[in-house]
Amino acid sequence: ELEAAERKVASDIDPGARAMFVAIAVLILLATFSLPHAGSANGWEVLSFAPDATAEEIGLPSRLFVGFAVVFAGLGSILALVTRKWALAWVSLAGSAVTIVFGMLAIWSRQTLPVESSAAGPGFGLVIGWFAVMVVVFHWARVVWARTSAQLEAEAELRKVAAQHERPRLMRDDPEV
Image (cartoon, rainbow, N blue to C red; front, side):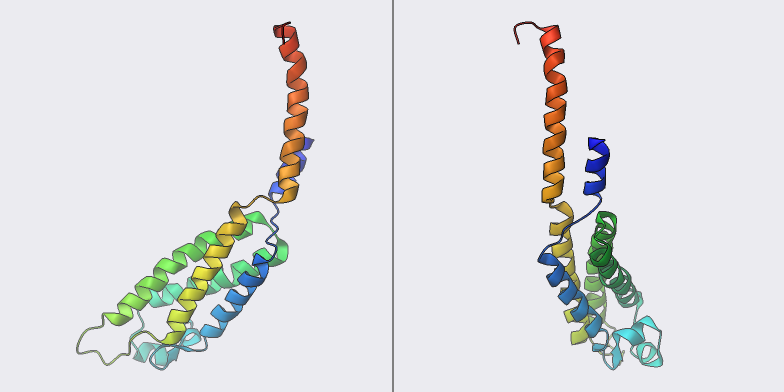
C-alpha cells in the first residue's frame, strides 16, 4: 500500500513559484502571436494560412514553430498548471523543447531568404515568442525533475518499512547481525 501511495504522489507536481513564471511566459508567448512574425504577417496569420502569411512566403519551420508553440508551450502548459499532473508537465516540456528547435529554424529560414525574394526577415514577435518558449522549457525542466516534499516523505517511509522487513531476515540468516 505504501508503493501505491508513492506512485500516486509521484504522478503529481508542485511547481510552487515556478507556476507563476510559466504562466507569465505562456501569456507573453500567446501575446506574441499578435505581433509581427515576418513582415506584416503575425503569428495567428501564420497558424491560419492567411493571405498575409502567404505573401510573406512563410515556410514550414515557421508554421511548425507556431503550431507547436500553441499546442505544447501554450495549451500543454495551461493544462499541466491546472491539473498538476507530472505526465502533462513532461509532455509540455518535451514538446516545448522541440518547439525551440523549430523556432531557431524559423528565425534562420527568415534570415536566409533568396536575394530575389521580397519577403521580410524575422519579426520581433517571432523572436520574443522563441525566448518565451525557452523560459517555459527552463521552468518545466526544473519542475519535472524536482521532487516534492510528499514524494520525499513517501520514499523515506518506504525505505523505513523495507529496512524493518529486511532486519529480521538478516538476523535469521546471520545470527551475528
